[in-house]
Length: 95
Image (cartoon, rainbow, N blue to C red):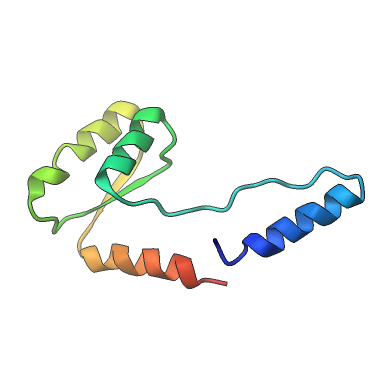
């Protein structure tokens, strides 16, 4: 569960108890995994795709920019795969 989920759920419960409509914005979440990302792109749910340039074997992701262009999803290619890992880890530990 995301670190902010209890606060968000508590605020929603308090608003519901007061008879008001709570803000139900979902938090931004980093998704990963080639199969999952492909499904998100094809279903139109992906907002942006970040691709590491040092993937081995390269054939795993070489077609991903073409799919992103076809579906109108912005994409970026980053130099270091560990930068993606740091983004994923910092997402889990951010306040």
